[in-house]
Length: 164
Figure 1 (cartoon, rainbow, N blue to C red):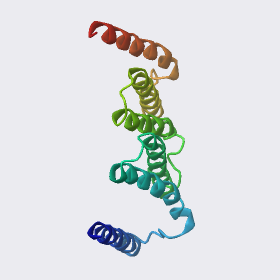
Figure 2 (figure 1 turned 120 degrees about the vertical axis):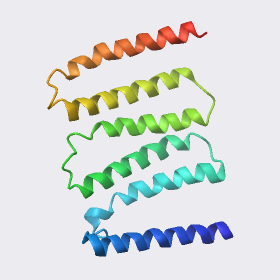
Figure 3 (figure 1 turned 60 degrees about the horizontal axis):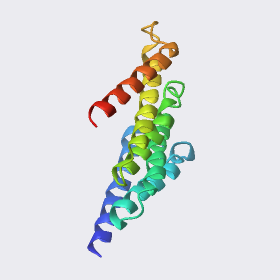
């Protein structure tokens, strides 16, 4: 029962912090236009907590990772009035990679799954770099994605076979 009271205390601290930030920063946190990402973020966090506290199936972590990552992205997007939405789209695929990586960590290890996780993460990070750095470095384009992916695939095959 003490854990429930402690969790309730944490929720009160978070609520008070949000209300205080609302007063100090003059941000209307509780308008629906700012509040709706919590409907995605909170279920993601609750799924994460349910796995670690109730020892649920690891597959729940895939959805938890996707919802938590997407929820955090939407909190960022709404707080910046969607100013960076054209640059942050790779985070959606990164959310899938995060969810799958959590599943990989807490389930039977599957190297094929790990390869696709790293491939998704690589594509996301590369796309993110192109979006943010492409304006300053004109040589950095999506035309480099395929050759770089082939190189990463080659490194994977090489390392997999050399360390067998």
